[in-house]
Length: 401
Image (cartoon, rainbow, N blue to C red; front, top):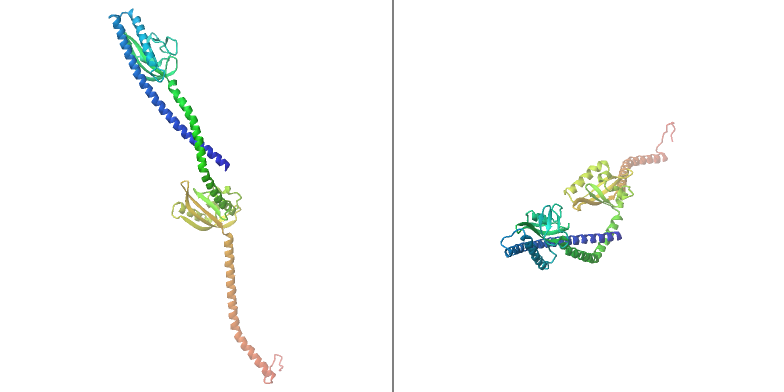
């Protein structure tokens, strides 16, 4: 009972934990995906705005300096535009709920040159084919879009990238947020939710046990009473499923000469009866399993473990166990009753024979009594006549008297 109670608690905790964790994980995943989509939209809108600002600033600086832009004026214009863009970035940086970094660069030979100071590194360039700065590399190839890839540090970031023509130079701009920054609030919420879930699980298990324990105790008591009745029954109780014995009580095993009921589990009932009665048992099992009849009572000869014949009366009804047809019933050892019946029959036959013998003797005695009485009377008359001298009786030796 204690082992069952412990297992029940463990199963309850496992089930509640699985349900809560699945719900939490699903919720976190959906919220995380939503957050990524929202940040992507914000980055895209911000990147488009920055690109437009750069274009306007370029046009302003270029037109204010001179109408003709030669190679000497380009660095000066570029520096001024970069300075203005830095100011724009500083003002817009605080408008995001997460730190956003804008990276602006161009390709020179086999290197990517960063035109703006990098927030997380002092490097000025990275090799174009190094695998780093993936979003910038795509932008410098003339592509635009959204990607989760590695930045110039090798950190995974959510980024929006686009090509940008600056004073007839091919450059690229990237707006990015570290994935770690996006995941951080969800990790914190997940940790808090985990401990809250543990508290909820323990409270739920406690409440569940508090409510169900009285019902389980009542069921357990009923089961113990029923099991006691079954185990101590004078009748052999059995359950047949798939044409095999799946349960027998001790009395059933005792009837067939077995010490342990477990020895009969998995045996076909046909193997426990006399060979000539096997067809009867098989047919009666089939009728119940095929729903031809609900219950059957009949008698057969059983064979005990030591091959001794025992007469048994079988009672069985159709049922369903775990959605599988089965037969449940009981058997009674009627060997003594049949032997007593045979003795009574023999006694009745003997009594009938004795009565017939008496009747015959009575009839023969009656038939013989009548002539004997006549003979006896005649003899008495002769004797009386002889005594009176009226009659002389002669004997074989010639003498008379």
